[in-house]
Length: 421
Image (cartoon, rainbow, N blue to C red; front, side, top):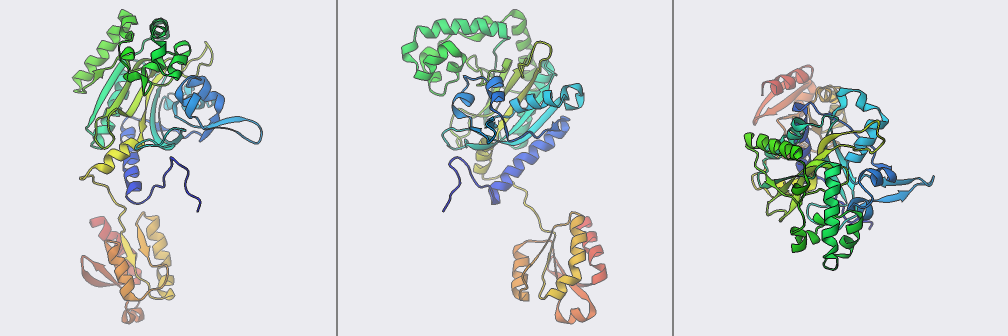
């Protein structure tokens, strides 16, 4: 038997309802922020991710699903959403219209990494990008939106970590200092971190293993390389968070894993026992040159990505989680094909009015059909007894009470009851 690939899963039943709850909750919130949805291709040019995410990042160097198609084009499955958004904005000239400066997406992403709880090789990501709106208020709004989403789905066990990694000039000075510092302790670092000293020492700070070493914890801090203006803006952002009663912790080692970030970066990290420690639920920050195209046009903005699988694991562990189920409005029991032919047009019309109708496709005896109807928990059960067939009447069972309705009155009776209840 052929099984699903490692790091993927089939989603159905209660699990599917939890995913739906996550997506629906976010989309409801996105509407209040006037965000517009965007859908980008599942695969893109490999060059796009190498250019925007950074060739030395873990995503591009180790985790990306990369392949060559039949025309020898080098392509890759999306490992994250922001690079595709940047490409779409440039290619479709969305920057010419303010209608598309606040975007969100819900999409599948793909990374080749060791599967574990809350981390799959095919996973869902919800993302937000506030494009060409970079300022203190847009950064604040982005963080508030992320915080509001967690509150909306009743997740309270998390810590907001925040940092400022400075402008490119400030960061370059910091990187020089890190190279000098880590060169002294090269032999104590992992093989990959030793290579990063020359290529991108910032990656050492958020390496899953080396970040726990004392020499890394004691490395120079970015705060010492920021200008007074940058520090003042950062302090103002923190004061605004405090006024909104949003708790935070400054983490000077927080740099995020992608090259396009500048200035403010943040992570909402779960403290829930259902995931264990140090699991990021939401991560994001600001960027000044997302597409790195040329000096004449740059995309700046702020955004974040939500790890849906980690949110899912937390919600699934909740004993008191309320999941709205798909309710069946009407269940019709058919004992012969002529009965089905009678109501076929009525069923079609009612479904067109967004009324959920179920019935037995295969002809069943009344007792078995009634059992299916009760199990469906439908609000209305409709059937026709032999004596009713002669009069063209049908029996309605509502709240264990029966009454007869003529075929011509079925649609009107159903809609009246559902409207009033």
